[in-house]
Length: 165
Image (cartoon, rainbow, N blue to C red):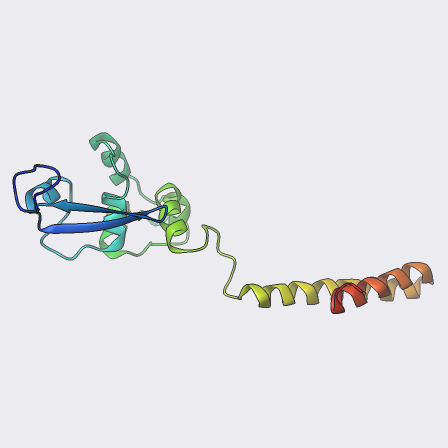
């Protein structure tokens, strides 16, 4: 198979990229891969592939600007992240948010961390929290002798605990 860039040499590097559920294959010779900035002599990390090749069509000027970008707190550069596949501090997520967002969205359900609890457990915890707040309001209503309000709060608690009906 010939290189897709130069159409002269044998393609020895084969990349498969998934975009919106569609796979796209890229077949390059070593020379074209090196010209595009890939280090063919060592193993590439996922961030190196995503930062380097994933942008698709970044101009040299844009690539230079991105490679000069660093975290204002720990001074980690994006090229350091490409090499180590690790960020330097929590603020790096903010500093490199534009570059990380598509990568994180592709790896996870979204770009916002919601915790380690599964959805069903999170719902149970929210339900328990609502019930606790309603019980506190019920106690206050009883102490204030607001019995009609207390009765409606009691019904809300039953509905929250057992479901409607």
